[in-house]
Image 1 (tube, rainbow over the protein chains, first blue to last red):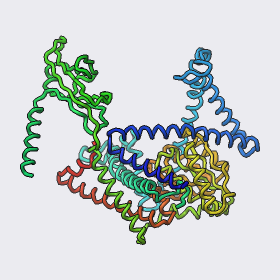
Image 2 (image 1 turned 135 degrees about the horizontal axis):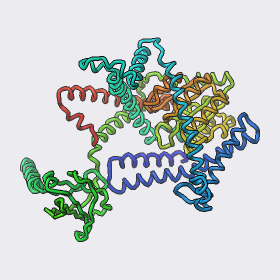
Image 3 (image 1 turned 180 degrees about the vertical axis):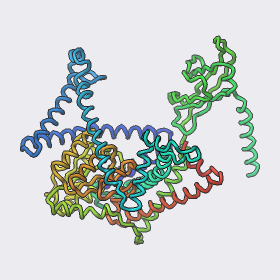
Image 4 (image 1 turned 45 degrees about the horizontal axis):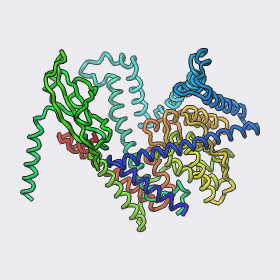
Length: 232
Length: 368
């Protein structure tokens, strides 16, 4: 019975969402919106679980002095500082328990929550994102080694695309006459991105789309049950 | 039959004659939920002067609608689902603001029971669903279907075995999206199979997640897997934990775990975006054997470059069926293959038709 009820709910909900995709008439449209709201409500409750998990893990790491426990102090301190300034003085569009934090707004220009968000949090995110540039370089260095015919083709395509997107690449082939314009590096780069690359991407997307249909059907029909423990 | 057809043709002709000369027309907006009306007017009116459109629910009090001056049609999607007559008046005024002519029209917004724009989608869905169900039923009857090897999935046991020998943990990352993303669900189904292996090998499994809902689901999946293989005591609730919802905060946390705990095997299976390469490269630098899988085409090259095994697109969704070895689930994979065959056929036919100037197939599958 523990497994039958979730399976029935899944079947009905899956079927409803499927049918609603093709029927714009009432009540299908509203039922779908209603289900999406339910999902948001459940997510809201689940956030508490996530936060409890975060606090518990960091607290015990500090308590037992596990490796890197000092970082956990930073995590917990950051968590509580953001939580408290948010509760007491609110955010840009919402007031807190102690009002709008006029003292802070007069001195630092914004509320404490927004100040920390704009001046610390966003910069940390940008720093993390900027690491991507270095990782792309190291990954590209390994990927673009001409070992086989395929990897050589990849290397040549990559050089064309990279050069085609720079002003140097554009000037390198600027001498070409109008009749050979298709060999101009930016044009070659555009061709590679618009045709072979896009065709490959679409093939993957079509395959993934079919995979989603297959997986959804397996779940809706109750053939795939690993999400409820896999029992028959 | 023939008479009925002629009668229908006559009615259609009559309607077209009656309405063809109308300079201002209001009709129900097609394929919607009954919230919109379509207003159209002739180009000749624009040449007369400036257009002003007014709306009324009672045909007495009219309110002006703000719209650009050079339009030939306007979709009024704010009819408040009245299901009763909505009245419109179109005034044409000259530069001095003097009224040149005025037209009135009205219509009732109606909700449709079927979105005809999505007919091709429905046909494709029905064909593929029947193919999948047919192959599932044929597998149920005992027919064996050949499924090609997926190296990335075959390597799970090898990866867990390596981690066990090295005495290091296995890291599983289910992506950064929530449970409403099919890729996350596909990732969690693989997590179940992976957890069975780690339980059998007595290997530590770490699952840091970025969404609270995924945390609950992952805990349940791993717990059940450990119970199913008979090692419920090996399950550690604290090894599945939440980091943060933030994309780069999450990746910073993952990098920290990889650097500190040095897992011997990393599984990155789910929905990934800009963070994919940061995690995969850190994993590569730590020397872990890495298996990644996503259906995001933009992230696949990064995984291919940095990981030992990559599940490309559909392989991620096929993983659960492939690993379960359940004939019914494998049958559904065969149904997907049939779907691919149909699509390849349609693409070839479409290309040939387009070359010869026939566009009906492309037009049919174009959703407006």
